[in-house]
Image 1 (cartoon, rainbow, N blue to C red):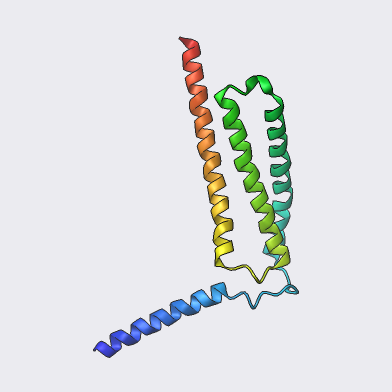
Image 2 (cartoon, one colour; image 1 turned 180 degrees about the horizontal axis):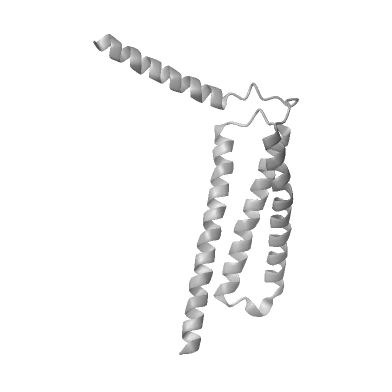
Length: 146
């Protein structure tokens, strides 16, 4: 009975290991591989979107630096922080597009986790900053009415 338990654990482990190996196996991906339709749809949807994100947030940062009379206001820093977080998201999206087109076979788990972590971190910073802007505006309106 102990042998059967050991055998099922070994089979389960080897199946899991096979799944992980096939997931992480980049040897089947080569630079000359044929793109799927999903790759093209994903890439062509992200190219204009990431360009708009990058250019728009650079313009927001330039205008935030140029407006010197608002530099002492807290909302100024929230807007600049939101632009930086969204700019990071646009840059990471552009890197993701190039990974699709170039089919990097040298990408390992660490770079994948780093890229996904940057996306999650910049989205979380963006949402948190929007919440801070909303609280700041709510306080400003409530004190203006008193």
